[in-house]
Length: 434
Image (cartoon, rainbow, N blue to C red; front, side):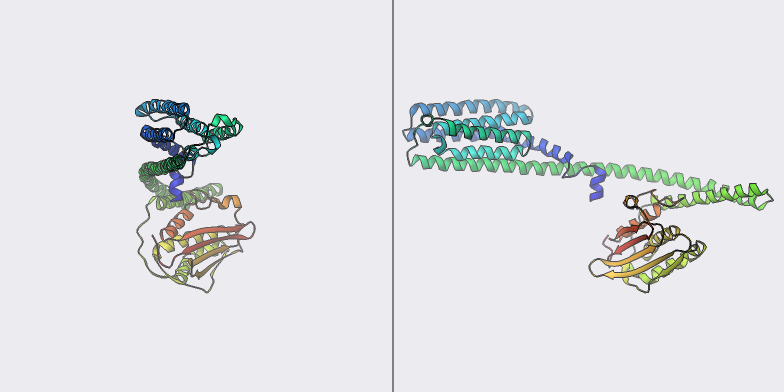
């Protein structure tokens, strides 16, 4: 999954997801703005009605009704914009601040710091934080709220008016608290809906990108395999002709040149063979009981002559383990890994293969050589196509081996120390998981 995310360039913790989430959040909040008048009008009617019933100051009650009417008118303009398009973040902030100022004015007109309408102010503030988060708009909304609170503290007491008489004070407080809960619920639901929509959209985009990449990779594999296959025939012909020419009497210098040409042609054939194997899709596994000790012995027997000609000691520690896997595919993988270890080891060195097990992780095959080792910077690149630390290598052998191991549900990792050699560690589950 991590490789797919990297390939697609889409991740649910990256900037692209943040941009999608922000776009979806604006769309969701725009829908909420469209429905805001249906929430504001009942609130205004209930608050003004309760104040009138309590016998509160007439001019203050009328001023409050006028404030609610102004905010409602401003909101209706936002609704008109929201019916045509998604509102910008700045327009959403303006709508939020208008509602906040209207509710703050209601607090100022009904007792100030002891007003029963404070919970509704906190509801607007909380829903604003939910919508704008840590962005500049959220910070600005927080600053405005702090300014309003400080202004309440500094205003002279007579500005606030008398306290609302009970039981209307309690009723107003209960209604303001309920209104705040509705606002906070709407804000949290908006954020949740935005994340859900952005997640669905990014999943769809990732699937489309991965499908396009898979189709393109399939076409490239088909084309490259065809080209590689076509090149094999002329290379074989050239190699044969060079062999015939080399058998005929030649000057010493010409013979040396022919030998070099034959070696280079052989190297090209090896590269093409590896590339053809790499470009083929992995075959389906044919699992059966595999005694890893016996499998490793077969691999060492195949590579014995190559190791002897290179002056490298090849051996297996006397341990074994039995798993369920595809013996042919595992043998291919080990041939590549052990062969690489032999070629990376200087004359007089050794390659030792150990087989053991871990009840939690599964069976482990460790291939340790006494070569020059791999630097930490290069170690992270081992297993990527066409990266190699050997002259004349292609790096495809490790890629093929890793593919087989992963197909079995296992892992392949390398550990190395400069001047002390390298260890390739294959971990295989007792049964394939893929």
